Image 1: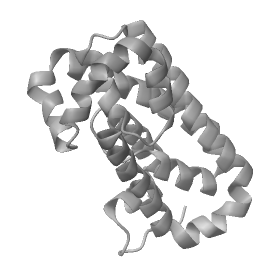
Image 2 (image 1 turned 60 degrees about the horizontal axis):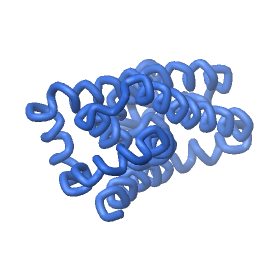
Image 3 (image 1 turned 180 degrees about the vertical axis):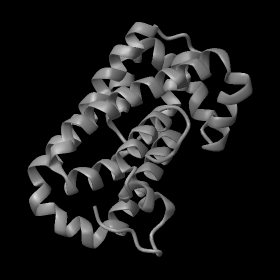
Image 4 (image 1 turned 90 degrees about the horizontal axis):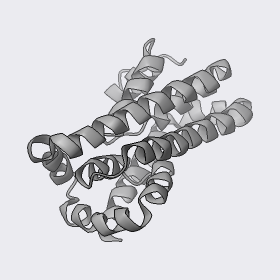
Length: 194
């Protein structure tokens, strides 16, 4: 891994430091229930610097993300009035959140699979699943399909492109991080207005 410079953000320092593997897994958990930043930045950094970690990291991020999704589900089912509503309010998604109920009744499983692959904030759907008492086994199955599909697809692409992409990644890390965060923001905008 490259040595972080003093100008890098705390997130970049964390994801390039000695605890990057664990930090990325923790971020995968948190992103599924309350944290805005996806683990993709950490996965990209780790896999481009050591391709042998690709499948192991994708596996652990998948497990952590599904567990984080279950935590989001529990927030929705049991703690919405105390915590869940504040998370939804923090991201200014109140209007969209309450229009999801009909979507869940019609397309719940496929909605979770689709949203789990995209930069659209998955936490909105994990919390909503709990609030709307969506089938827990379908929730877990959809989360496993979506999150493992997403992380293993990213790991596969990075494993194959790693030798070519690494010099560009090292040079443009700040821009890559910015682009991923921009996708997250666009995801929030999409979910709010569509």
